[in-house]
Length: 80
Picture (cartoon, rainbow, N blue to C red):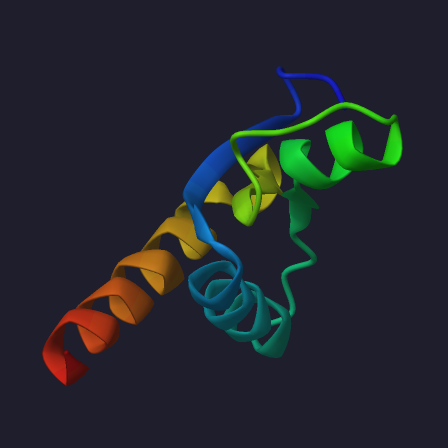
């Protein structure tokens, strides 16, 4: 994944990332979810980042994705 083609729009635990990912997909954006903890676990290493994930989107969809992420974050804050 080239850093010039994709931008991180969100990071958090599995539950919050799932909520953001589902909303992006519902709006036609295909995000990439990076889970370093799972990658380390599969490679046989311990991880301090278990459950922490990052969401990336293609730069062509960045503006739309950022608006969706902000909306989801607002909804999550309002419900807590």
